[in-house]
Image 1: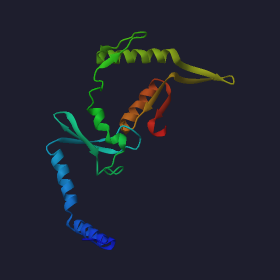
Image 2: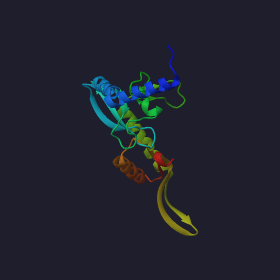
Image 3: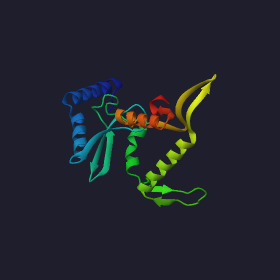
Image 4: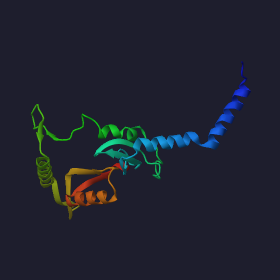
Length: 188
């Protein structure tokens, strides 16, 4: 039996119309999605990669991330994710992801495991030393002395994963440290 191009297009159009009227494939997709994530804890979050701020739904089971997908109710991405956002699941579930502090001393050829308390104290000490070494209280311009209170030895950058309150606190902290080089990922 031979079929003409015209009859093929008529049949395809009728089939597409019938599927659109009944809505069966769309309903089947929704049911499949609900079955896949049924019984899981879920929460919404923002993608940490760029400054767009796409919404995501993270599904967890026993505290472990088991699924990440775009949030269809989010006004920015409406459920779609770029390749980086779509691969975020691999960041959460990666056997090579570091979960402990690793430190390599200057001129050493090996990494050592350290505690989080040690790492926080070390960072605070290094930040204080850098601030003290690079702090400028005043500078003279054309014979006039100005109080500047700045620290040219540090820079800080905000990220898309931070909300407004976190960016506000980061900015306040940076200014308290005298940091003049304060930037945000969205502007870079």
